Image 1 (tube, helix red, strand yellow):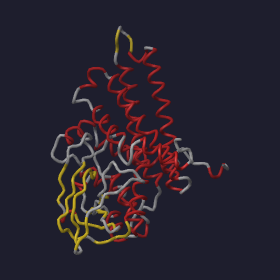
Image 2 (cartoon, rainbow, N blue to C red):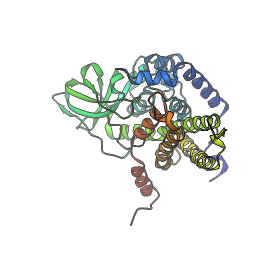
Image 3 (cartoon, rainbow, N blue to C red):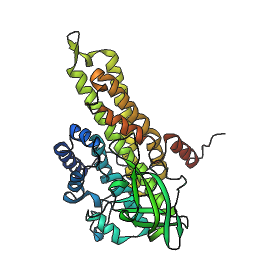
Image 4 (cartoon, rainbow, N blue to C red):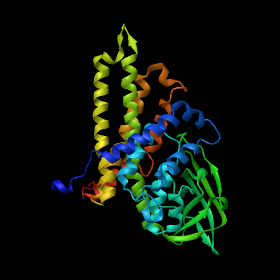
Length: 362
């Protein structure tokens, strides 16, 4: 591989500026106590925060062309945003609307809906279960007499959507206004990204395009950029654990000074550094189109284990306070656990990777 074609894993000045702006906003408007309080309410989504991100900062349209009112940016910038949202475990529909649904609409050429998303007047959600991998089977509803009938489950952020992108049994992807569907919240481990059941009983829908290419593109981008969210989770957990152990004292010395804990933190730091490389490589591959399937599979084969391990270490090393409901570490553990099966499990991505590089199991 030539030097010119190597992925750029370091952030540019513009990307660093975007990171700083998003982090400042989240520091002011998405503190852990506020997220915890909202997660216990009937509506865990932070609508004011979403409006600030989507409208005031224009982040809902990052991947949408400028001609349609978007920013015309790349997946690298979206990855920067998701890394910061992961650090704050922010309860906003950025991944589901600004990435996954946007990618499906781009594949279909649905310019009117893309313009609505770019203007932050509409939240769109792909009505596919959060667990479905990029190459997995996609359940669809029944289309009969021009209307849609059926039920889809495990759809993330459907409760806050204005438009649902619904796969049907005729191979088409249909835009359905949420008001024409029944959306029922389901029990979810992750309190900050609720899932729901979508029921359609004769709902009208506008055909946007073919399901297979649109959904495959959308889920691939979702899986690839989910790794950046998982990186943000792991990085926050490592940073907070190091900070806590430097302050907490036993035997009149900081707990972080004990060699056994230093070794655990050092191993975790190495894991997070590896995840950073894999996540940024996936974002760069999505932006450039170079070895995208391989980069996404590598990132997701690695990301879940690191994020969950970081959360488990943080929970244990915080001691008794980490076990309390008031401490936010449980929110990160639940998000990490839910992310570990989102857009395909690590095992599914390893199997996909084996096929891609022709190393199938005997």
